[in-house]
Image (tube, rainbow, N blue to C red; front, top):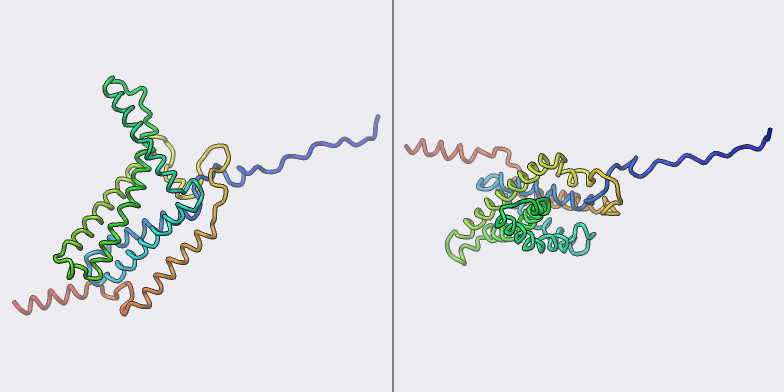
Length: 257
C-alpha cells in the first residue's frame, strides 16, 4: 500500500454572485441623480405658491437645474448604459414598433406585436420627457423669480411655470404608474435597478464600475448648496411659523369688517 499522499483539488472560492447577486445594470451616480431629482421636484411642487416657503422653493428649483446639468454631462461622458445616446437609440426604434402595431391592428392579430419592446419604449419616453420638461420648468421659474414679467409684460411667465409644473407632475405620476404596472405584469420589481442597481439573473455586469465616489460627491454638492442657501436666506429655508402670515391677514380682514 503506497504512502504517497493524495492531493485533492482545492475547493472553488465563493463566486461573485455569492457576494453580489444579480447583474449590475445601473451605477450609483445615476441612482443618486434619480432620487435627488425626484425629491427636489416633489419638494418644489409642494412648496410652490406659498410665500413663507418661497426660499425653499427657489433653492429646490436651482437644485433641479444643477442636477439636470449633471445628468446631461454624465450622459455624454459617463458609461454607455447611462448615456443619452442609449435613450436616443431606444426612441429611434419607435417608428418601427408603431408600424408593427399598425400591421397587427389591420390584420386583427396581436401575436406578432413585440409588446415587451413597446413597454420599454414607454419607459424610455417617460424618462426623456422628465428631463426635457425640466428645462422650460426651471427657465420659467428663474424668469418668474427675477421678475422678468416687468419687461415682457403680463403674468404669463408665472402661468407658464405653473403649467410646466403640472405637466411634469402628470408625467411623474404616469412614470410611477407604469413602473407599478410593469412590476405586476412581469412579476418582478421594475424599480429595483434604481434601488440597488442590480437585477436578478446570471451574466456579466452591464455597468462594470459602480462609481460610488461620484454619487457621494453629487450628494455632498447638493447638501453644500442647500446649506449655503440656508445661510444666505434671512429667515432660513423652513419658516418657523409658515402660516403666521395667513393668520395675520385673516385677523386684519376681521378687524376691518
